[in-house]
Length: 297
Image 1 (cartoon, rainbow, N blue to C red):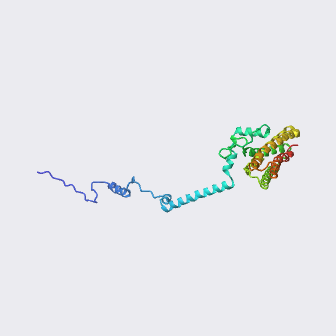
Image 2 (cartoon, rainbow, N blue to C red):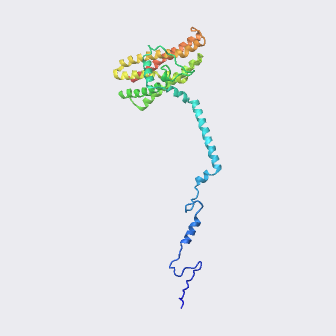
């Protein structure tokens, strides 16, 4: 008798297996995830582009950024030109090109100018060499430091006499600056009136006139240590030294130009130039005493 065959029901598409306890949802989920995948992605939804990236990708924004950069560069160039026009930064760098050896030699020259022989400023291709290579070249480092030190020493002197006050110290500093400004203006006016064609610049004048603060510091410090006698001795020496220094320095700047122009040595115009040189040199000791005598008692 033939074995009975049992018919296995075939599940229809979309119909669940009668013998399966749970529905298989893996295929649906895989289809769902597969639908969310983009080309070249790792199975995660593509992130939305940021506003910054969208702005940079815009050609109009790129043109605006390039135009803005060019405007900024032009503005910087214009500012640099105007600053160099009114404040010669390049020239100021020359006057601060010093080193320790130059400062030591220059201070020695200011206190002992009597033995120095060569007062000519050295040039290299029509340009004066930096001060650190020429002791005769003017600089602004020593005058600037000397002025600051003079103000500090004045405050010390006033403090030892119980007369210190910020207002009085400010008055001392402003008075020194005012006298320096008047000196420069008076010399420029004198050079104009006597028609001197010289290579002296305003910065050169400030440098030469600022060297007197070195002697003023020495006089006040000596007065604080040894009283009026020491003050007068040291300040008198410094006054004579700065007078000799200014005469020997300025005569090469003012009188040498007259000789180069063919002006007679005993001519009237040359005599005026000599008087101007003497007046500038003689004004230094007077101002040194005027700005320091009240600091020593």
